[in-house]
Length: 101
Image (tube, one colour):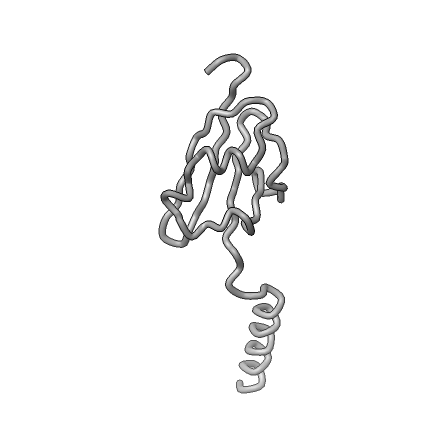
């Protein structure tokens, strides 16, 4: 690695498997370019890069955001349930349990 190059990580996790892949980057490399360079879609073909949501250290990031040395890019999976609806359902179930006792 030359002095203009640095490392970043690309992370993706499923319920039963996760991967963190180190990528050599240079100034100006974007989130999407690093993800493509990592070839993570070879291991996880279900990742849809056109619609995927990304983050850097847990904060939302755009695909065209430029990277800094040591950044960890996270690829987020789509939600399988609406969090607001799920909370509301749990609250209703809790109320029903209280009435039943």
